[in-house]
Image (tube, rainbow, N blue to C red; front, side):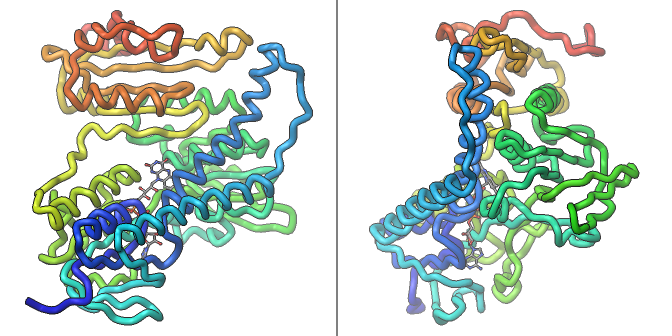
Length: 460
Ligand code: FAD
């Protein structure tokens, strides 16, 4: 047997890499993790966590309006972006430190620097040396994708820079319709920035249920976000006074800051994958099997770099399954079915399972249960925000195929719904669950009337 420096070399200390490295090291394996930036990866440093802090920060302006309806007097509260950023950076540093400590305590060695494969068993870390290893795990995540050929795109920022703006702009234009674009639109609008969201498609949040997409669009507009759909960018022009976005419709949108949130791509550039013989899929992701093994016998890949479901808990579970398989003699795959997700828009979305359209396509006959209503907190102060709750049920088996919630706490609610859907819950079982009153979520277990979507009539 060859005498390697390590049993496992992990490239990338993000969600997937850290979990795999920690578990492998706890089994007694000699593990190294290379990280070119900060330990914690996208989620902790420039993704889920700082984004959620920004969502929290931005919600207070709306809460203040609601508070007036509950008898509180108008206060002269003001928001200090710099103070918020400093507090956010302190907390991120604390969390990143915990990741480092956990890796150290498990016995994994963190090597700071950019790593690349020299061959299937050799990794070079810039400025740190060349190391041999029995196994390699690629966990390098993804990167924001920008339309590089768009004239003037260099004037645009991405989500990476949005976490470090020196000051808040007066106006922002966000390009994109995915969850990151939608979340940042809510954040900036909540913080008082005049916000325009521009998306080339027919509606935002592609992939989510159509009723959810329409509902979120309406609610975001109520919160002051301008949403421009069906428009492409032709060129971005920086003048002395502002930035002008020229659209293919002939319209020109003047703004102070442009942010592109037009998707993310697997981060494989310069990794030496060719030298090691690792094959990529057509979309540029590292191709893997159900055990996250690549085309090379001793190399695996987990997380966003494999572009399966690009969420932190999924990267963690893929990393854990890899460690179980390779270091605990317990062959494990992660089941990518019924993974719940949230959009921290304002109001937020929680979703698990199939959209109505996908369920019709895959299962044929389905029943829909749908409720749109003003929650009691809103009716009290005369607000006009509405919630949406929707169940997609297979006819015959009565299995619930999808559950979608838009409204306060939807991401918290959907976590528990996901348990039931993952277990294959049927509508009668679901309905036998007694409601919790008075809550928004009680509506989930009290919907008895089937909803007939417009235009489907008896064919539904
Ligand atoms: P990452 O966490 O990206 O880690 C990869 C690491 O590898 C990075 O630290 C990188 O610096 C390092 N690296 C890359 N190449 C090299 C190299 N050659 N050498 C050394 N190090 C290298 N997911 C959710 O579940 N919920 C959310 O609310 C959510 N919000 C998000 C918001 C934003 C703005 C973004 C961008 C993402 C969000 N995500 C969210 C997605 C989530 O962050 C990712 O799915 C998750 O971080 C993927 O983990 P990973 O281990 O695959 O990669």
